[in-house]
Image 1 (cartoon, chains in turn red, brown):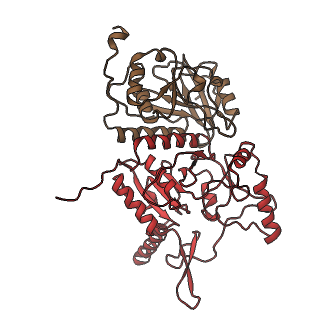
Image 2 (cartoon, chains in turn blue, brown):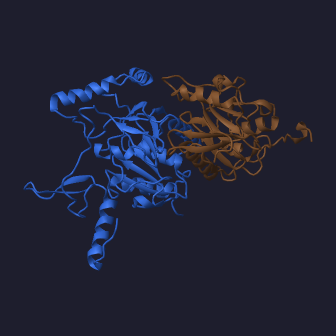
Image 3 (cartoon, chains in turn green, purple):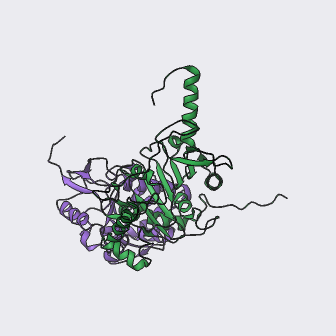
Length: 292
Length: 208
């Protein structure tokens, strides 16, 4: 007799849990940037490994979806591979590594370089949803600060950076103002990615499993990174091209190559890197110029 | 046929495939809220209570359960078949005061003033009502242009369900942001939405 395999509901979560998450998602979309509490469930991975993102994806995903999962931009890291195979098995969805072919992209700490299009859903895994948490530890107090739209604390923090370092030193999880109303944590994406959130045609959903919060940014919504008139927000920049594909304008990771201090900078978005490399390879082989 | 004769002892079936059908209906509702004024196709149960219809039936099966309170407005509130069907398939608590409800199911004629519904608090604006408005067979001529999150520039909204009193009420609803109610406009096979962030402006008659 063959061993019985456990049979899970489609999308892993039970229907009542999905309804609870779906109701939270609808309110999150209706109040852009506001953190809606939800009853976070256990999923087969530890809290802090993307359980919020997984629950949001599970509530949204259907069998006609195409799922892409990235971890720091990469499709081939442990977290990304296991979440992708999890949904391939419990939701029977097709998976892809190509940004333009995916209908749902679950991401940990990056926004793909390929511009997203209308109809796509970007699901962020969020560790600390409250942007004011390290400035004000009391949840009762941060809720009140959001209610009163009292975000002076955050501006003081940015000012102290300028006073101490001469520039705003926050390079990831850079606070944003959504729809001109709610201060929001974009999750620990590099500040390089912040401008991509502004008026993005895709629907952006955020799930924080351990902290039990869901929030959202609807398409074409203003997402403004905080700054001052004389010290405006400045995203990170890279001067050199990617050492693998030669593209410029993407976010680069430093990869250590030896024990002697050698390193190279390569695209963090593996799909973007691979496709750029393939494209430039074809170009040089055929001698034609592609207009990207 | 009298109401009593039509009320079955066994409620009509819900979704043919509860998991997949609910997922598809939810995506339609989510897409509608993310793209206000735009209409999305909605597939529903084959034999919903006639007073509810396929569209509202699908949204009810997708979103309602024992975790939320629902108020049925006007003739729907006295329709035994709908009450039995909702109780059997969703288990939602039916309340008698619209101010207590998370979900308000109404048609344009029976929709109470929006200010009477739950609009949440500044600290918890998500504790607010979602109105499931039955827009089947509405014959008005109201047209608005809409702006706000989810809309690229301006969108046109044909709103046959809106009467003269709707625009001032909705303007007050958007002005109370982050508090406010959200509106799902549910037809027989379609759903569109107006979240509290969508601002409506009147459009002169006959303007292209």
